[in-house]
Image (cartoon, rainbow, N blue to C red; front, side, top):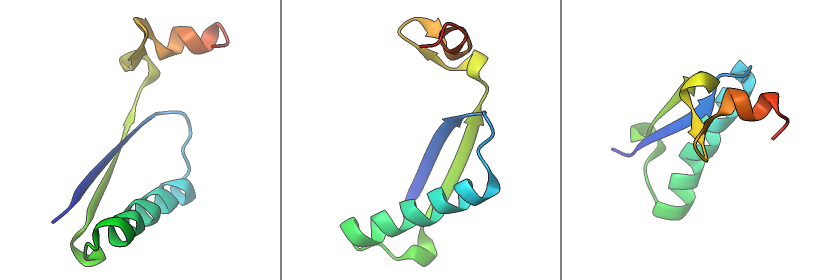
Length: 67
């Protein structure tokens, strides 16, 4: 049973976009690995930008500075 975990920052990802991610990730495993889509699990975790860091900084601060 394949398990896919997608992590994104919590910045207004719509229900429609999440459905597209779930469908696309599932189809990718079908196409590349021949996995059965009925046994593929996809979980989307939304992470607050204060809890996500890159290059030693919180994403919140990087975005505030326009990076």
